[in-house]
Image 1 (cartoon, rainbow, N blue to C red):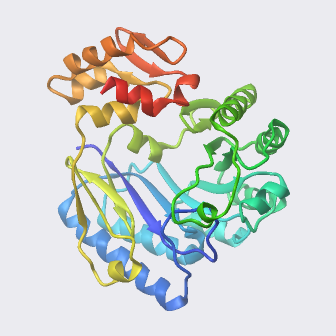
Image 2 (cartoon, helix red, strand yellow; image 1 turned 45 degrees about the horizontal axis):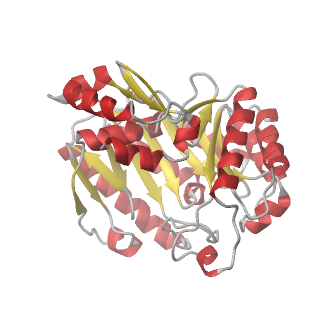
Length: 365
């Protein structure tokens, strides 16, 4: 059976960014200790149910580095003791650039971490202030230097598009900052105001859809000029440096999520833990989220990727996969070439199409 991805949600943050909707709480020593115990218990329990190898591990948050290198190591050791990790390809830790040290990177590298993801968001101080970020571009530069010195070259930085009063010049400065640091992977997201966040309560004026689209296409063009290939709606990488963990999600493969708010997809079933750290620590049961893995879901996930939906893969995964692909292909051919590319073996959304991907996918399913 195929190896799976494992996602560890670390729900700790020193302060919540005004745009953030992820579940997090303020850490204290006892809470972190109880959380680590609960995570290790869940790892052992899952190992008795799923006899699978681990393809990737991803520590997301929150701010995973707040549990320290010892916490990261504890969890990784528990995974290694209970699952087959001989062929694990990628272990990623998200970090806050102003709360990491050289020692942290050195020690997590020893534990097996080989990829780091950090939220730069912008290299411009005014935009960082608008986003409520506490770090500076210099903090990011130092953190990247620490990681590389520790031997972790596979680094991803996040960029935010569509901020209030954002210009192409501002975005170009951020793109050039990443390129000069020789970062192999960049995730670039259009800012969306989520309900129940501080931004939702403020009178913020973001660029309209047309202006955001123009900024998105501008960033894509500038990144590709510098050797970053777009392989997913919001993700770009140097050759061979795609996020292997996120490809698990987008290719419709299986994964286990552990931690409050973490979701899983195993054996065509979806389930998750409630966004409640106390309940997670006390052993609350997972919540059933219904069936998953049908053709429509497979189509939706794969069309996030530049490579698109592949006929051969549909046929291998579903009994009637070739028929379902051909039905989607007939619908796709009615969509203007500006937004979609098709041939007898593949359906793929273009850069312009990514901006209206939800509409396109709805038309195909």
